[in-house]
Image (cartoon, rainbow, N blue to C red; front, side):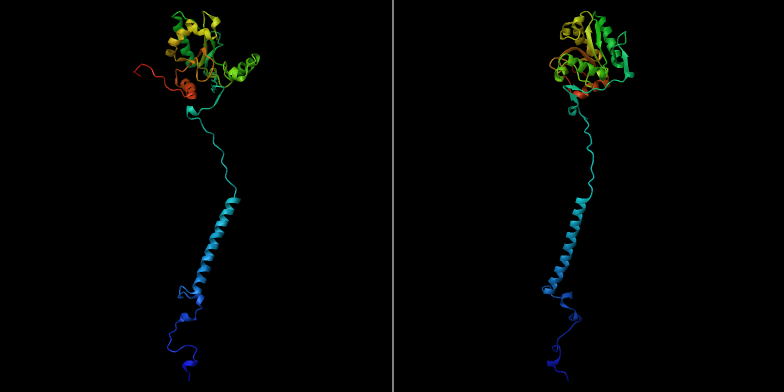
Length: 263
């Protein structure tokens, strides 16, 4: 006969299947029990280790993987104020194609672009009708011709590039390359050709008052912003869209207000 004092369990106590499960694995165990904390530590330790491993793997891949390089794209001078492509005060200009050039003198030696040549010849005729003789001295010049003019003559005159640039543009930077520029003299006083005292001639005075009607303007007036010497003989055509953009896109000049109120 079994007595209460000899049984493995107290009499009248209730039991459940969970009592046979080790404390560390019971999901009904008390939250404050040591077994519960051991489970939590194991679980969170495993999660933390996995996260640390993932982060370390990602960092290793970032460091060791080849980096993709991109070439720096050239910055286009889309606005005039960003145009820094100039040398010693002279802006870069394209060379006119041969197909666009026509003679403005009888010997064919001096040429300009077709649109400019047509207006120039009309201007010469208009001046002649007023007793003024406009003489063509120089028109289109190639970059190769400008190299000789700039370097060879500069060396002959013992001029530094900066000194030479005040009188002649470096190759690739002359308005004469465009086929829109022309040097003009007075046929009655040839001694003033390419001289500053050309501005005392009838030819210059007539040009000042009438050249704009034919689309021409003085390129290098006194105290010009480019620092180029005063050249009263050097005129450029700006009478069509291409010529206008060729010269004015490079310089970012502002409109000049006039007293006229109508467009």
